[in-house]
Image 1 (tube, rainbow, N blue to C red):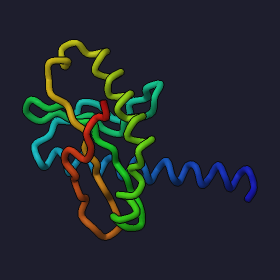
Image 2 (cartoon, helix red, strand yellow):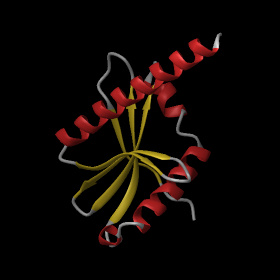
Image 3 (cartoon, helix red, strand yellow):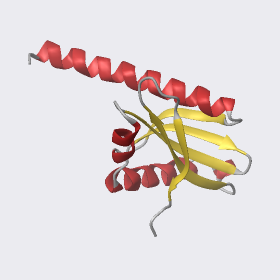
Image 4 (cartoon, rainbow, N blue to C red):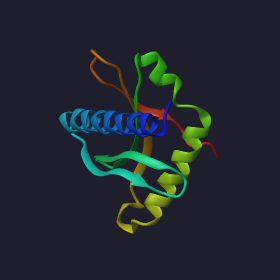
Length: 126
């Protein structure tokens, strides 16, 4: 693979990721969530979506793979711990949101299937 091919592949993955995040955001909005932030870059990692519904701030990891099973496998422990650190950083910068409850959801996407929203996909490890 040439350097140009690698750059093209990176752009295609980036575009596919943006489409998946847009689909996930729309799905959440249909379910009554308000999108607060998208593609939040924090030192720990990038948070795909931050949404709110009721008293909950929801940090959403969007995973798009060939199958939902493969998407579910992608939420590994190191990914969860990075997202937890990023969520704490995000909340620390927003005092008005610190009194809200928060959780981690996963949105699994696969071609030809409706998105699968996994509420409270994992709990913060203490």
